[in-house]
Structures are given as structure tokens and as C-alpha cells.
Length: 349
Ligand code: SF4
Ligand code: SF4
Image 1 (cartoon, helix red, strand yellow):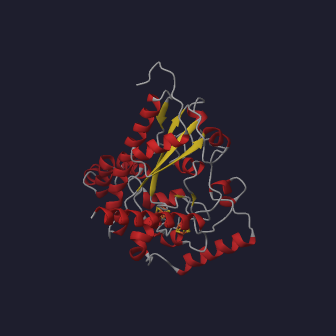
Image 2 (image 1 turned 90 degrees about the vertical axis):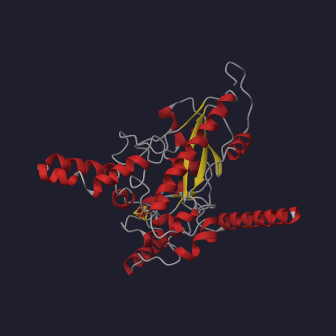
Image 3 (image 1 turned 60 degrees about the vertical axis):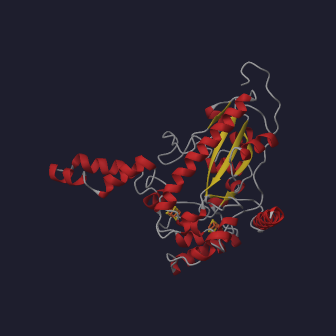
């Protein structure tokens, strides 16, 4: 430990190497100054300085959700994987924070999934982990405003380690990672018609993605309070109460319940390696959804005023638009790494 000793000089590269060594799938550095200057919504500043004005940098790590879950007929495996990934991610983040402290730089892990009820009456955290990831150069928004990484598309979770040491920040990517309106596969797959034009209808999404989330639970409690005794007894044996119980026990059903927009997104090496065959056909696709995707495309081509792409929000979508360069680079790197591993294995025989 380094308590009371002089701080060790560390670089962004040192921190990234340590994060990868400790198990992060991806890592980037966001500048607290930039996060304070560009809150996702200036009316509700999800900024580091609201937590601590001492914070100078945020180390952002990504853990991917194993693709196997998205190859299943049921959603339960992905829901269970969500919990495993989140727990693993928190542990890795905590280890990074302890390591930074050992180097003489105070650091702590942000509450990634917690909601600050004073922000808005929905799931808005103290910081937005998607925006942290974008500011750390790890990806940017898809049409459904999930963060899309070139490596794993939207099949990821992120968290941030806030630290007082100034590290060289990566900054947002200029290229749009999302293929855009011409793809619209997330929109086609959405059972709640919640996907907008680089926007999302959160309550509509929550009906499917948080089947046993907070709002469902409070609605159930209200109904219970008003019910007659016989109905109350019946409710105690209901599927809803059991769903609530499972949500508390192992997250299942309380969030991330609907993986459809994650499963069908063709961005990511994992999609091409494991999901393309299973997810090619989208059973939820309707002519109406296809028409909506086309209208989005035309609106963008015409240069209509689209809130999700306005002057403020374009920062998180990628001001240069989609070129496919980032995806191609990541796939090339993946193939090169595979060849290297094969050559290594051949050499070992
Ligand atoms: S999680 Fe499900 S309901 Fe929510 S936007 Fe994605 S596909 Fe739609
Ligand atoms: S499915 Fe297509 S439109 Fe939707 S986020 Fe992924 S790349 Fe973008």
C-alpha cells in the first residue's frame, strides 16, 4: 500500500494495461472536465462534479455479454448472464480502484446501475454509463440509444472508476458506429415500438425490458393495498409476486429483460462470429416498422430537425456519420489475432 507515501506517476497506458490485465474487455479514459462540460441533458446534470469536484478522470471499462445467450430460444439465459456480467464487472472495477489508490491516487467505482430519484422519474443514474463510454472513445449511440462498441455492438455493460489523477483522455469517436436508418434492425425487433430516431421511449421499453421492475412492483403493491382479502390471498400466490421475488434474488426480470435490440444488432465481431445465422430473420418485423425506418432515413437525408441528432446530441452519435471504417478495423484485428493464435498453436505442436 502507498498510504502516506508520494504518489506514483502513472500514465493512461499504465492504467489501461492494468485494467485489461484485471479482466476488462475494453477500457478507455474519459476526462471529467469534458463530462462536466457536456452532460447528457443539461437540465439534469449527470456529471462527476456533482459527486466530487476532485475527480479529474474516469476510467471506463466494458464487459461483454457472452453471445451464447443470444442464440437461445428463451430470454432467461441472457437475463441470468446480465447478473453474472454485472457482478464480474463491479469486481474488476473495484480492483482497478484499489490499484489506483495503491499508486497514491484516490479512486472509487461509480454506482453504475443505481437511480438518482431526484434526476427524472426513471432509471437515470448519478452518471450515465453510456455517455461515460462514449466520452472514453469506446463507441457511440445506436438508433435505440444503446452504446454500440465496434467489438461487441450493444451487447455490453459499462462502469466507471472515478479518480483524482489527471490521465490523458481518449475523447469521443467522430465516426458513427451504428449503421443507421438504413439498417433499423433494432426498430424492427422491438416488441414495445420503443425505438425512435436516435431516441427511445423509456416507459414503452420498460414494459418489456423491466417486466418486474420498480414501476411494476409499486403498481402491484397499490393493487394489493386496495384489494379485498380473498383477492389479496390470491395475489400472494401470483406469477407477478414470484417474478418480483426472482428479480430481487437474481436481477432476472427487473431489468435487461428484453434482449431483442441487442440480439439483432449486426455491429460487432461477436455478431458475425456467433449470431448472424440465428438472428438474420426478425420475426417481429412488420411493413409498418419498415416504413418507419424509411421515414427516418428520408428525414435525415432531408436534414430535418431531429432531436436525437441535434447540435448537442450529435456528439454522442458520431458527427462524421457511418463509414464502416471502425467495424472493418476491428474485424481485421480480430482475424489477425485468430491467425496469430493458430500459428502459435501450430508452432507448439
Ligand atoms: S430492450 Fe426490448 S423493448 Fe426496449 S428498446 Fe430494446 S427491443 Fe425494444
Ligand atoms: S440494429 Fe442497426 S440501426 Fe439498430 S443500433 Fe444496431 S446498427 Fe444501428
